[in-house]
Amino acid sequence: MKVYIDGRLVDKENAKISVLDHGLLYGDGIFEGIRAYNGRVFRLKEHLERLWSSAKAINLAVPIQKKEIEKAIIKTLLANKLSEAYIRLIVTRGCGDLSIDPKNCTMSPSLIIIASSVSLYPEEFYINGMEVITTCIRRIRQDSLSPNVKSLNYLNNILAKMQATKSGVMEAIMLNAEGYVVECTSDNIFLVKDDIVYTPSASDGALMGITRDTVIELAKNKLKIPVKEERISVYDVYTADECFLTGTAAEVIPVIAVDSRQILDGKPGKITLKLIEEFKSLTRLTGIPIK
Ligand code: PXG
Image (tube, rainbow, N blue to C red):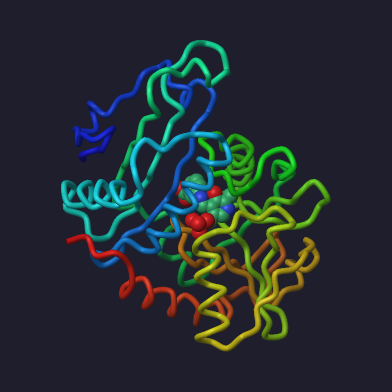
């Protein structure tokens, strides 16, 4: 595997950064998870815009221009001979000293691109659905840190993920400080009730996921189903007709049980399955071509 670091493609064994990089010392940095399908990078413009917004929010200067990052991603995919890939883009704060203040980070931020073939969940889950739990770990309040900053510090989501794993499932629903459903540890959440699609709104602290946006568009424009961005309670989840999760790594995945309660008859819902199909065909046909 070849990894891109600051303009160079190196073997993964040599893909190293300094122990004094604040990305490592404090989780001070940002990332994006992107996918390539069928030789095309899906929604690259949106991912780069979100990266730039994350950078702006934490006052970090991305070391190269968007067009250059696009070229670097393509170069990395070609070097690894990948046409279907999960791409991780990382920008660290850079090297400093042992104080949290980034003013001492005199070296420029590092840009890292890792591309590999990855599937987050077993194939079987996409056909038969998956079970999730509600975690007691709350999402960080958005008045402390916006969920839209995709920072290198994912500890609260990691704690929630660990709780899911300990409980024998692979994903957990996270609530905000008020106790309303926000999203999962690395996916957005959707419900279907009486042929209307619901998802938590930005004001409840959900990350404005790029897959979330794509699915909202597909539901509205392709399936002609209304979508409401609304406050959702755990009760709403338990009593929904359908539930599914979205994320770049997860794509669109049906949920069939939450906290040991079956969602309707415990099978992936009709609208969920249609959205999975629409998502699959869209991702194969759109995006920035690799060659
Ligand atoms: N919510 C959170 C908290 C996320 O971290 C999403 C929703 C989905 O957003 P997109 O734009 O990808 O549709 C994410 C996605 C992984 C992984 O390896 C994914 C994410 C973060 C960390 C790991 O699956 N982000």
